[in-house]
Image 1 (cartoon, rainbow, N blue to C red):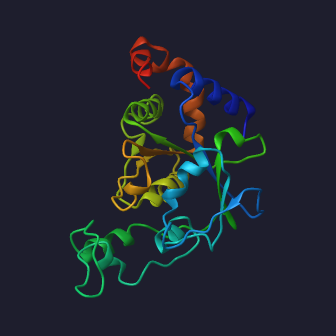
Image 2: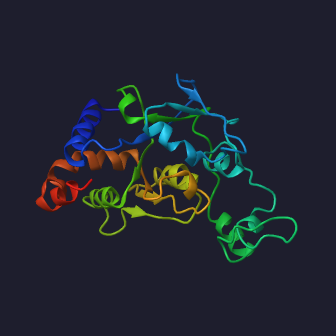
Length: 247
């Protein structure tokens, strides 16, 4: 990771965003780094429940045994499995057997959804959530993740659109919270023009994040472009200063 990006973003975030919560990054490695090994269970099973630990300074290490939910394990690339009857679980359920979440109208729509999404393969034995302030030049992040209020989200969205495609530099695909954090931005890395991903619309994940925040996950090449654009973008205008004053 380039020193100029670490220093440039840190300075820009302090100047334009009043030192509010820094992001964390997602990396993969075959070598286990120092940090907290995550073990999720039935009480705390959602990957999304760990984001504030990373934001608050904890380096989190996930492996194939970390996940309390098959969805999280699959969307991080550690498994090709989903729970039995997943198409009913996500839709109407089966009376007496599976309580449906009713996020899709029918099992057929869920099957169509799964057909559109090729399986991810893991990029390493370990997935790492690392706080921004712990990064150094040896790190190679793939995704940068913010948990953002509407004002901050509007700035990230606008900065993502400062350079790139005419309209669609940010997407919000249907999916779970962990898919928004990990799977979707990893897929964007395979695109010649990676897009940022707004997420945490998953009703099942909403109770483990703050009520006034959504996620904004940026593939690293896009993030680097955004950092280099900060000082010539709208962030230097009075319009942004007016919003910044209430952050």
